[in-house]
Image (cartoon, rainbow over all chains, first blue to last red; front, side):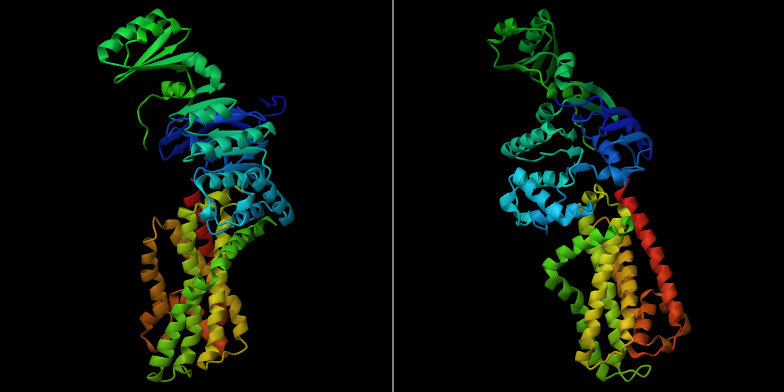
Length: 311
Length: 252
């Protein structure tokens, strides 16, 4: 991690609140992002993630609170701040009628980047994102992974200090996701600051130095993902399938170890706070079971529940 | 410098338009040219001179104005709605240093430019029909651009209010078509009853049609400056409203 805690944070959010008519979408949240840090913003649908990001970008007007991006007050100094920000949107907003290179050059023109500089930058980014041989291709002919990489390249045309990624790998095949992650890690090594939202918790766990979990417009947990998992979930998870009677018995036996349990229909989840491997013998007769390290998904479910959030 | 940022949006549109130039030009010009042919040539043989002009002469400048109206308004309805709702182009632009006003003015001037181009082509085609406009016609061009700005802004207002493409059917049949039919392109407003005439005179295309005929044949027999000032005020107001409504649509 190459975060720099001596210089002022790149993002400071204080008491940020947003009401849509009388519904409170974001309720008095506070957070900051240090230079070089990647903050993962998590939460179920409707938790306020997108609204928060849109307020940072001036696409949603805040109801109250303060936003400071790169020492600039938002929305007062928004146009100046946007010069230093790159955004990878959730929805593909490439110009479908333009070629790969034209997309980048057009975008650069919005930043008043001189044509020659933009041309060189585009060539460099297309090389970096393995798109150089698609330079003159029309967007329609690109694969999903190539489009996402191009969106990322586009967001980097203005050499941003802060990169905001809204679901950067949504709908991609595993190869494309891993390729994008590698590229994002390379950018992190160069010291770029990132704000990431994603529903893929493996992605967030891999890329973020710190996570912030939002639910119902408020922050329910914040910190280093590994530490949060250890503190709030445990070390390991046993997942066992079986009949109700079998699971009842197992649930009792696991009380001998420092663990919490959870039942979801015909499944038992055991979150262990210490090494409970000695209890593995109990599972010999179970129809199906597994033991795995606790992960961010467990934490997420624990904090935000198992019920569906559909708006 | 910053106030000219809308030019970037104009240039983006221009880059894409040049890729589809033939289909869009034919789409925009087909209708007025066919009207000129059918009404001017066909019907014109049966119709005597109006206000001292042959029917083809009478019809030509007005149809050029209608080409401006249709081109500009189509661009900022169907074209702009696609960018707003389908391609998310405006969302992409809004995270760059450009703002809502830049997008709106870029779109309006783009629609107006396409409108002006259609108007110019129509006027240039008039000699093919034996109609020769006066040199004053050159002074008409800035007016056609102004009319283009107005109709583009009007179209963008519809886009801001639209929830799907079907919404534009109302705009076309209840707004543009009455403008097209009753603004004095096809018949002289002098000959109809006063109440109806007052109403028709208030349609925004009417002063444009009247002015275009005056400039085309160099006959300044009506208060032209007043009409231009009226059109200018209306256009400024319509642009402001378009900015307000598109901002409401894009920024929550």
